[in-house]
Amino acid sequence: MNAPAENSAMPRYCNQPPQTQPVLPSDLSPNRSRAILLVRAKWINGTVLHYAFLDQGGDVGGPEQLDEVRHAFQAWKALGIGLEFQEVEDPSDSEIRIVFQQSQGSSSYVGRDNLGISTREPTMTFGWDLTTPYGKATALHETAHAMGLAHEHQNPFAGIVWDEEKVYADLAGPPNNWPHEVTFNNILRKLSPNEVTGSAWDPDSIMEYSFGPGLILSPEAYRGGIPETLSLSATDKARVLQWYPPLAARPQQLQAFQSTPLQLATGQQTDFEIVPSETRSYQIGTFGNSDVLLALFEETADGGLRYVTADDDSGQDRNGRLETRLVKGHRYLARARLYSAWGSGSAALMYW
Image 1 (spheres, helix red, strand yellow):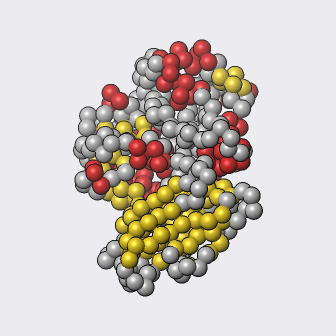
Image 2 (tube, rainbow, N blue to C red):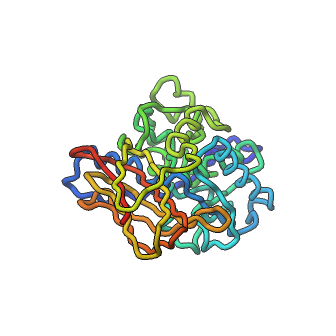
Image 3 (tube, helix red, strand yellow):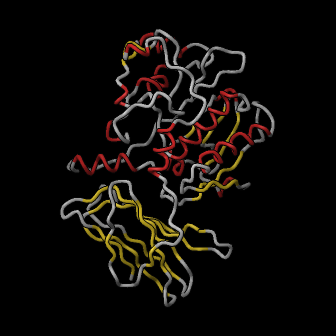
C-alpha cells in the first residue's frame, strides 16, 4: 500500500504475493470459467476470520501498531458485512497471521489464498508505522486483501497505459527496491476481466495506489499522477457489501430428504439450518448443473459457529457432497455459495 513515512514523499507500496489460479479443464465453458475466477478468492459469507499477531509490533513500533490493525478490521465490520473478525493467541487457530517487519514492506495474501499458507508462516506483513494517516490506510488496504479484494490500478477497465520503463526504474529504487517481476506483479499486470466485479475503475478506492507524475501515459487526466487515498470510497463499501451482505437473522430450515432449490446468481449465497432428528452419519449435497462452494458449521454452546467441513466442486463434472456425523437436536448451518449454473440453470440442496 502507498504509505510513506510521515516525513517522506516517496510512496511505499504493498508487495502482494501472486494469487493462486485454479486449474480448470480446458473444455470448460467461458461462462463457468469466468464465474469461478470471480468468486474463488471470496470467503463463505458468515465466516469468522481469526487473526493472530506473531510479534508485538516488531521493529516497526509498539503495541499501538496492533491496535491499528484491530481498528481496520473493525472499520470493515462496521459497514454491516457478514464476515466476523476474531483475534486469537494461538497462530494455529488462525487464518490470518500478522508480523511487523520494516525489511519486508507491507503485504497480504488475498482471500482464501490464506488457507494455503502454513500456520507457522505469516500471511500479512506491515513494514512501516500504522499510526500515521498513511499507515491507517495501509491497514485498511491489507485487511481488504485478506477479505479477497485486489488492487484497483490493475483493474483492466481502468485503461491505464504505463510508461513501463519509468515504472520499473522508479520502483527499483528506494524505498521499495523491487526487482522487475515484483513491479510487474503489483503494478503493471492487469487482472483478467473475469476476475473483476463490474466494469468501472474507482481511482478513489482504498485499493488504489498513489502515483507521481510521469508514470502514466493515459488516461490524460492522470498523467500528473493519482492522489493519495486515505479512506474507504463509496465503491469500496458497495463492493464489500455485495460479496458479504448482512446475514439473515434466522435461515430457512432444511428438512431431511426434501430437496430445496438454490435460486442464486453468480457469487450469491444462501444459508440453511439443519437440526437432525437422530444421531447418525448424514450426507449433504447439491444437485443439478452447478458449481457450488458448500460448507457446514455447528452451533456451539456459546452461540458461535464451529467449522465442520466443506466441499468445492467448481470446474468439476460432479456435485458437492459432505458426509459427516450429525448429533440429534444440535443445530448446524449449511452455507452454499454459487459460482455458476448452466444447462437447465437449476440447482438444489438436500440432506439425507
